[in-house]
Image (cartoon, rainbow, N blue to C red; front, side, top):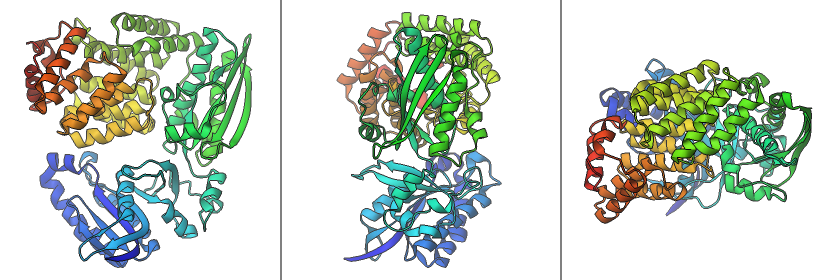
Length: 596
């Protein structure tokens, strides 16, 4: 057994299964050409060697870390250039992970903890992206010429301790325009701490509920609104990783353990504070802390009139971003701010409606619609109530409450389009409009186009990723569906409505044929929301697939207890799955005892 210190580069083709399923005749020869004409010559020129090909990727080792980074970045840039003429859905793009460490070398393979870490980094990378470990970052020091983004400590699959991860910007764009200053470049030991203190690398953040210091329901909505809008603004910046608001609802009050919360949520920064109302004036305190050390980075107070609430929220978001992500242009942040309502009553009504929307109870559902319609009456130009009213119709059809699914589908599309007309850069509005297109209207191409727009507008919008997963599931692309659903869940790990993300992930595993995983996630979703009919269907069909007939019949009966009028004949025409997936799905539900 021979050990060696080496730079390990792991790469695979993003969405390889989908590309081969849909475009095999075009994809395979182009991939072989890229490997022969781009990858292999570049690695040889960098005095590296390809240890093995993995069908949709490769594992390579280098004696020099500097040449390994240059080689990886060069490959990504060349592949991007060669594939630029292809339509986006057909483009081949590698995801890469690079680590430097001790490996075990054999004649035809290498293995060890260093190889495992490189593989996990590769799984994190975006198509065309390059992820590097903290050891790579430190050893490169001033030799790294490309911009990087610090993603903080990340929990990786089958890796015991969280790993510090950095993204190398290999493509032109907003990230490349703002390379790190020399003071932020890591040097010898201890430089990671120096870089964190500099705050130049954009990190991850969670915004906790702000404490309401003036009791009363009206003032509670103000505190909730402050958090909602700050997160919406930060979530529109791809330089930041922002945890969904409802994932932080359990963390409130005094005596917060910032380090523990940061660990639970997987973020590096925590923003929390308080709101006090004095008649028509507000005082908002906002404290930004380093979740790794518990240190207070900044503690600011914002005063203004309640009529200018949204301007105060913008000031807080700008201050936070200037502190933890100074290279973000302020115009980008202001672009990410949601268009505020003309009056605060409309926003209050939306917040009240959300309390009822996710209960999945018919009476509560009706109340949610009333509140959203009131919000529209108070401010017809405010996008948010239209967005959630479209979602209301989605739930109405999905849970079997609609007496006319066709009319609900039309109305969902109409109000979702109205939301986008009022705020074309709202990620949630774009995502829900995309979901309406696929789930209700079965226009999958249009849906994917809107999901792409949603993710561009708000990369940290969990529903955009999870709804995109649902659509790829309807089309039968299980691997892609799993990837997107897992990302949506990562953005909302402790979401009060986490059942939605868990249930879509269960569906994705079902589509991919991983029935045990589908059952596991569907059970988790049922534990959080027992009334979710769509999740019970996934659980039932997965149990049938594994021939666990007694259990499948139990859950089919539970479904009928919640929705006694469920019939396969009326459900099948509106089910969004494409053939032959739909035929197998309906047959499995039939085998579980669900009536025709």
